[in-house]
Each structure stands twice: as structure tokens, then as C-alpha cells.
Image 1: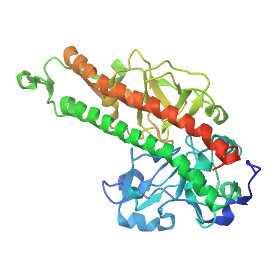
Image 2: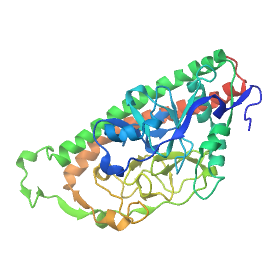
Image 3: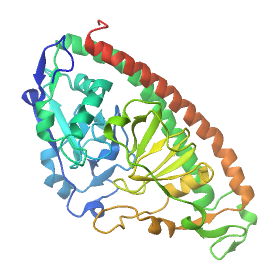
Image 4: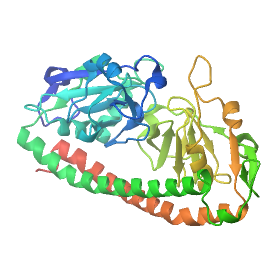
Length: 384
């Protein structure tokens, strides 16, 4: 299907040297190591962004088994299954060497005909995202893009000069977005370090004068998640409903789209139930959690709980279908500091989080401006 009429189109499979996904190494999570060859999963691929949150690594012997899906510089990565289907980014060079698992496809066009950067922008355009999501939902009950679907895609192929001009213009926006993302990462890192310093290493203000009783500082409460927190189930949402709207839609891999209505009033915490089990996200605004996650309402959500959940060890405990069993999650120990220290932590972290939210809001506006510009460039409404 030709989505853009003014340019010559080519079938993607005819100009690619590689279109294919990988596999999970035998042994699954048990073979992941701290250093080695990166194994890129769907949770690392966002639209226009590669994130190293949860980035796994494998040893050389497992990397050799997956050498057929070796990721190369400038490769386009496309999520092909699950809640995050159709999300797309380019691999950053600092990740290499890398492989992909079965949920991520490598798309490697011939750069003498189609610039990988141009293809990436085309894939992430609102028009193409909507089309890819519709194709992913057309073949069965589970969202999926097959290799045959990707190969059959007809993509615009203007001259390399036009492609490069469009890429250069859009990269100006992406540079600003990336700078803000790095600032957000630094701020998030500083907040996590503060949490660990106070509540894991127990070097909180005044700790020298506090006795440790039964393994915790005096005045702290030993409890469980289930005694203090309600994990509510999200609600299913059709893939077609995730594109247009102002409210973020959360799956277990993070934001997977938007919706015209919210299901939960923010702020709130989202915990992955299926797929990316135990992932934890904070939404400062109203949001829509789907059925692969639990959510915690605004009355219970706070920054201490948010960071505590991030540090909990959740495992796949749902039998044949990997997932986070709610009773298991409820059984996890939950230590609550005394009230004054807890309030001090919230007051200290709040300015950091507010700066994060401001940068994120600015990035949303930049993304909106780029997304308005992108289809106009692609449609030839704006000449370059």
C-alpha cells in the first residue's frame, strides 16, 4: 500500500540486506550477565528512542549462537510482537556489539538507495505507525508483524539528496530531545542514589543516633506490599485506540500510545504484570493502564513506594504463562520508614521529580512539533 502518492515507492524487501528477528538464548534470564554482548529486547525499543533500562547482556558462546542477528551501526530496530508492536528506533553505536531477541526485527536497507535514517523517520511517522498497528492486529489475536508483512511494505524512495535534507531537518529536533532525555536520566539517577543511600545503605540523616532493632532502624515498620498497597488490574484496549489522544497508555514496557480518555487519575504507579514483569513506571498525569499491568492509585502512590518497587525482585511466578502473580507481589516485604524521615525524603525528591516532569513536558511539545512537521515533509507539503 502506497501511503504517500508523490514519490516513487519500492517494496522494502527488495532493497534490504537484512530483515529478521532473533531468539532468546537457551536458559532465558539465567544466562544474562553484567557485561558482554547486548541482547536487545522490545523494552529497549521506543519510538525514536533506544533505552538501556533493563538492557541485558550475554556471554560470547550465546552471542555466537545468535550471530545471524548481529546488529550493525545504523540498523533500524522494529518491535514486532506484543503491546509495543510497531515501536521503532535506530541502534546507537554505544550498544554494539549486540543481538536482538525474537520480539525485535532488524531492518537494514541498502543505504545507496534508502537511508536508514529516512526509513526510521518514515516508520515513526503518525501515518505509518497507524498503518503498522492496523497490520499487526490483522493476523490473529496477538499483535504481530511478520517478516513477510515487513518485506511487503511499500516505502517512499525519493532521491538521496531529498532523503538527506529531510533527515537533517528532523535531526535538529531529535538533538534537543536527546539532550533533555540525558538530563532526565541524570536527574533520575540522582534520585535513585538518594533512595539507596537512605533506605538500602541506611545512611539517612541522623542515622548515627538511631538503634537497629530486629534488622530495621527504630521506629520503622515491617510490613508487606499487600498490607499497604492495592494492585489494580488495567483494562484491555484495542490497538487502534492507542494513537490519537492526550493521555498516555501504559503497557508493561512503558508508554505504548495515547488515548482520548484516561482510566486513572494521576499521579500513579504502573507495575508490569505480563511481558516485562515487574517493570515500574511513574505517571505524573492521568493515564490509561492496559491489561498487562497493575496500577496503584494517586492516594497510595508516593515516591518512596515508587523507588521501593523498582528495587523489589519480582519473578515470573504464574505457571505456564510468565507473569507477576498478584498474591506473590503482595507477599513481598515492605519496610516503611518513620513518618518524619519519609516526609523529608518526599520533600527532597519532589524538586528533582518536578524538573523531570518539566523536561518530559517540553519533550512532549518538541515531539508534537516534530510529528506535525514529519508527515508534511514526507508528503512534500514542505520542500527542503
